Amino acid sequence: MAGMTTANGVFDIDEWDARPYDQGAEGPKLARVHVGKTFRGDLEGTSTAELLTVVTADDAPLAYCGIERFDGTLGGLRGTFVLQHTATASGGGSELAWAIVTGSGTGALAGITGTGGIDADSDGGHTYTLEYRFE
Image (cartoon, rainbow, N blue to C red; front, side):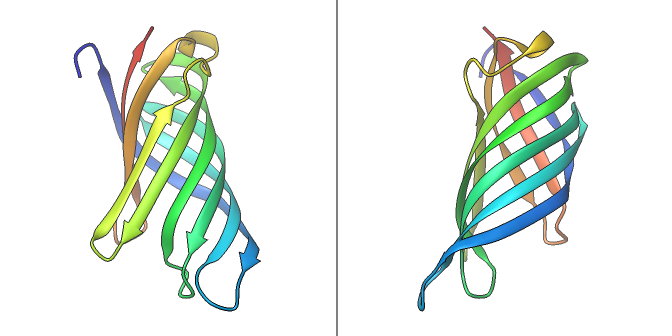
């Protein structure tokens, strides 16, 4: 996208607290998950997220949505912003996308907008891409 800057890096999941809220006798379970992360790369900092997940009986995720607040630096600029997540998975792979919530930036990150994605490898590592600009 024209006028966009791309940020890349990795993150670690430091906290994963899943609490089922609907487990029917059949089909997938629904859970709320509190997640804590540490980011490295173009994003340097930490985040807290709340996810709503759909999980199969063998704990394989099928879908989730969530809200995450990042606190740290992006390209040397310090502040916070909120990401909105959507994700789906199937036997053919997964798609994990996020978007910066318009108007959520604070500090030097005020006015930030953008979209990106997350890739998870088979060893449990996570990489991210974020295309952003300031309005």
